[in-house]
Image (cartoon, rainbow, N blue to C red):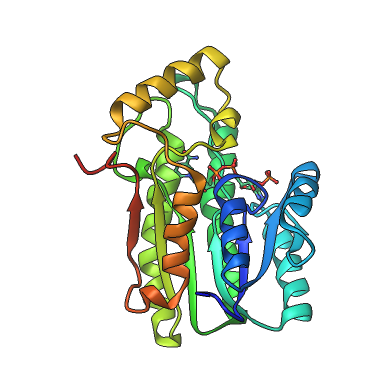
Length: 248
Ligand SMILES: NC(=O)c1ccc[n+]([C@@H]2O[C@H](COP(=O)([O-])OP(=O)(O)OC[C@H]3O[C@@H](n4cnc5c(N)ncnc54)[C@H](OP(=O)(O)O)[C@@H]3O)[C@@H](O)[C@H]2O)c1
């Protein structure tokens, strides 16, 4: 049991990587709290995760929502040991089609959401606590149509270093897990047609040195390593789990 008696918060815990992480962390002994915004997906996650997991609803792009969630956590649990700041979204568009709203939406969730989640949970984090942030292989690899999503993740990679340095004196570690292309509902929300998605999927399988999409559970296990004391001498770093996509 790597997270025995730990209190763990997972944002974006209703789907994909966050949902698999919530299951794994629960099975490793943690008391798990997940955050999502979509009521139907929260409901579905509730039946999948069972009664021992607490579900809270909020939009991480709204600091007031995060504040209210953190207050609920403070009242019920008093402190947090692990934060997995994983909620994220993306919108695909080529240079000429990118709009201001698309930029605000992606930076709102992926950057502002992570920043304020860390800022507002930090007072509850215990000494020895661990923050894990989900970045992306897109930090390192240029992909047509994903310029803004990639930039949000590069910004968050930078945050992990800065916030790691700020929180180190309190004994709190901050690291990133960087997934490659993973089979989750994420891709279906990019705004691409079925044909475009299928073309992108076969191009990705060609590009990934291991010639496949990763599974959400593979990223959950990397996040578990960073969340637990197994990574006790790591902070400010990024653990890449991308089938070699950014390495060769
Ligand atoms: N899948 C990939 O290929 C891939 C690759 C690299 C990095 N990542 C990163 O991995 C993380 C998880 O993505 P995933 O693949 O697991 O996608 P996913 O299945 O679409 O899950 C995304 C999660 O984020 C939550 N979320 C999105 N916007 C939110 C908001 N405004 N407020 C609160 N929660 C919000 C969603 O909740 P709702 O359903 O309630 O909206 C959902 O639980 C993201 O940060 C993503 O950028 C994914």
